[in-house]
Structures are given as C-alpha cells and as structure tokens.
Length: 451
Image (cartoon, rainbow, N blue to C red; front, side, top):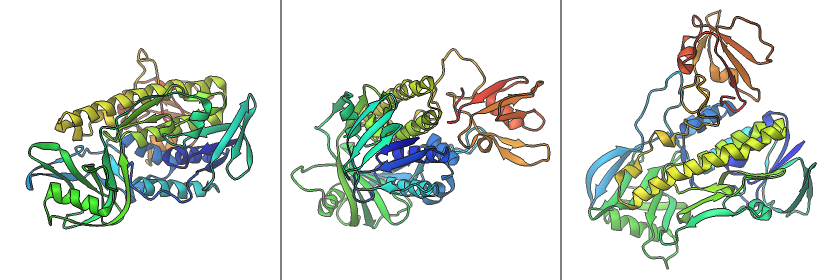
C-alpha cells in the first residue's frame, strides 16, 4: 500500500515519518524547486515536543532550538520593562516538556527530512500534483513530471492554496483581512543582544511597532512590523527604515536579510477534511493567525492523528480523523483569533502564551467519560522502576506504532499483545500521573491518546 503526500512542510514530513516507521510505502512530493529557508512558524509547543520524542527527533530539536527568551520592551527609545511569552516551568513526571521552544521552520523541516531519510524516503522536489481521480480501491494521481501514481490514499498537506482541497471542491470558510499587513523577515541586527528579544514601539501606540525574536543557528532575528508604505518592496532598506522609526536611528544596523514575506490575517477552516480516500491536513485544512503559535503545531498534530489511522485502514477508524481534527482545529482557531483581537485592541496579554496554547489539553473522547487521566485525554509520561531497579519511561513503552494496554495492579492475565502491568511499589509516579487506583486499565492509542 502506497500513500502519496502532496506537500513537504512540517505536516507532510511528520506524516511521512509516521507512515514509514509503520512499514508503509510512502512518497512525498513538493512543487517547490528548493527547500524553504525561512523561519515562518518558529514556535514549537509542548505537545509537539512530545510527538517529536515519539518520532525520535527530540534530541536534535532540543539541541538546535532556543527556549522562549525574555523580551525587552522599549517605548519611545526608553526601556520600560521586560516580559516572557511564557513562564518557565520545571518538568514533571506527567509533563516532560512543559516549555515551548523556538526553532525556525526551515530548521525543523531539515531535522524531519533527515529522520525520514533513515527510512529510505526523500522529498521529491519540483513535483506537483496536477490532477487525480479515485474509486473505492485507491487514487490515481497525475504529477507535473508526467508520471501517473497509483496510491491507496492521497493526503494534501500542500498549504493554504492547496490544489488537493480545491480539486475536491471543499469550501475554505473564513476571512482574510487586507486592511492589516505585516512585514516578516529573517535578518541580523548589529547592536542588539542576540540572547534577548526586543519590542520597539511608541508610547502612543505600544502594541504597534517592531518585534525581533532571536533565531537559533546564527545571529539572525525574526523581525515583524506593520507595513507603513505599501508601495515599497520589502527590502533590507525598508526594514532598516522601520527599525530607525521605532527603535531610533543608530540603535541597530540590519544586514543579511535572507527571507522576507508580507503577512495578512487569514483565518480559515475547511468544510471537510476528507473525501473518500483523499485527506487534507495542516494549512490545507486550516490557516491561523500567528498569535499563540498554533498553526504549525496544529498541522503536526493532524499528521500524528492521521498516520496510525491510514495504517489501520478500517473505515470506522478513518472516519474519526475528520471528526477529531476538524473539531480541534475550530477550537484552536478560536484561541488564535481571540489573541489576535486582543493584539488589535492593544491588550498586552496578547503577548502571553498561556496554558491553552500548549496543546496538552486536546481531547478526543466523550466529556462524560470519567476514566482516570490528567488533562485532555493525552497519555501523560511517568518514570517507572522495574523489578530490577531500572528506570524506564511510559513514553518509551508507548513509543512506536502499536497501542498499549496499561494496567495498574492487575489480578488477571492479559491477552493484549502490548500490555504494561504496573504496581504502586514499582511505579508510583505512573499512578500519580494517571490518578490511577488498583485495578484500573487504560488503553493508549498509537498516537498517545486515551482510547
């Protein structure tokens, strides 16, 4: 069985890795002629870090990324304070990665491509999907190279302008606000401390100015600022003019602009996430404002949800993808939209990345279900001590494509092929993480959620 993925951003790459590790044949194509080199989605939320742990890339992600930095706030050239986007928390048995990380999207994609290569799969650049048909047995896709691909499933992870979504005729409901335009670019800034972030604005309008967030792997910042003269091209000169306007002449000398774009508030949700054997995920299914850092992370969660279901193949399992992920995307769009409105209203709390942006509270089960769990229905981690005194982690036991039956102080044998039996004496942290008591049984799905 072959799965064809259109789009090699974080969503498509995550899905490709998840399918490849399950032994499925996968092809991933992208219409771009070269790999993306900008920062774009640069915030990785705690739940995404847990997904990366399961996929085996967490060590490299942590090595290359930065913690959320302190941001110095200047109004009219005078420092008036500082703040963090999120307070630093200590890891716990239940939440091993409580703090988000900053990593430019191109670097995240590079890490995922390297992992995918370990399974013998590489991204096929300069290859677009230009048409497809499907029946009950599979999908026939036409590629821009002239090749015809026969696949069991097609997944469109091909961005907000998704060809796959449009070809399916799926409505992309929402709005684009052309009255707001923000210039975003990756640039070095001599005169500024790269260990910090900066917010430069005027006392009269503190929520409109220029923001610089340090990027890992060099001396660049991601710079964001409203466009003040729309007729000008987004060049280094334009960014320097904005810097001088908000920070003051001579405060920072910009150089080495390597990526720049113009962003407009775009909030949209696809009417459907699936038609037959064709699915959409990531920006093809939902686009978010950058507030709260949810877009890239929600796409990765789409892929993590879809991978095991494609491998399973049963209709009753495949049908849950749209139900679960579209509901969650709508919820996250609400969070991002509320934060964007706070920003437009001049509310400084829009800068904060609170509990509801960490994506640890995702739930796929009936709220009337009262089985033991900590938050949402994500399976928490915990440190275990086996009979020989060795330390293990629940995440290590869950790792991989299988589901896991977790039993607390069982009294009967289990016929489940992946059973983990725990007792209070050897695994007290696991009992605490799950609020579990003797006799409880919890089935953990392949994507780490309560079944």
